[in-house]
Image 1 (cartoon, helix red, strand yellow):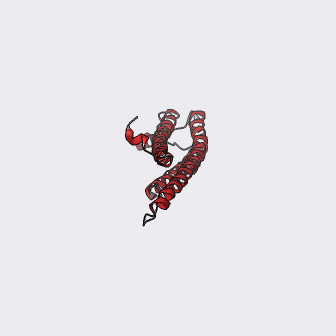
Image 2 (image 1 turned 45 degrees about the vertical axis):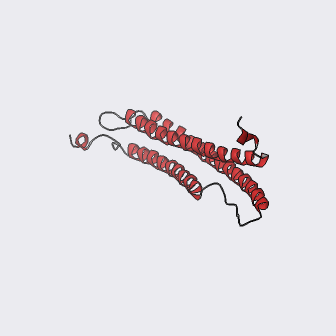
Image 3 (image 1 turned 90 degrees about the vertical axis):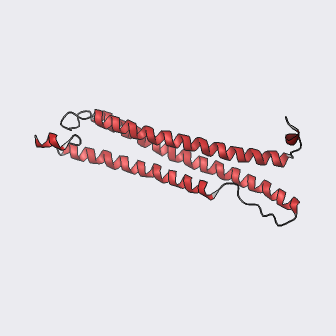
Amino acid sequence: MNKERLDESAVQIELRECHEYIRHAFGLYVGWFTFFLTTILAAVAWSFVSSLDKNGKLVAPGLFYGVVGFFEVQIILGLLGTKLVRRSLAAQDARALCLLKIFADEAQGDYKPMSPVPEGLHGALDTMRIALIANLVFWFIAAAAVAILTYNGYSVGGTQSAHLG
C-alpha cells in the first residue's frame, strides 16, 4: 500500500469506495441491459421465423408464444431489477454527498458539495426503463397481432411473392 493511501482519512476512503461502487454498478447494469435486449430481439426473431411454414403461416405457435411469454416475464423482472439498481445508486449517491458535506464543513470556505452522480446517469436509467417498458408492450402487441391474423387465416410472414403465387 502506498503512503498516499495510508494518509487518507476514513471519510476519504469511504467516499472513493462510493464512487467506485457507483461506476461499477452502473457499468454492470449497462452491460446487462445491452445483452438482455439483444438476446430478446434475437430469440423472438428466431422463434417467429422458426414457427412459420414456407407460405408464412404459423405452424408452431407454442414456440413463438412460449418465447414471447418467457421474455415478457424476463422484461418484468428486468424492470424490477432496474428499480433496485436505481435505489442502490441513489443510496450511494446520498452517502457520497453526506461525506462531501463533511469535507465542506472542514473546509469552511465556499465549497458547496454536489452530487457525484451526473444527471445524465439518471437520464440514462430513465431511458433504459422506458426501453424495457416499450419492449414489454411491443412484444405483447406483436404476439396479439400474430394470434389475430393466424385465427383469421392470414399469413403472418414470408414474402409478398408467396401470397401472389
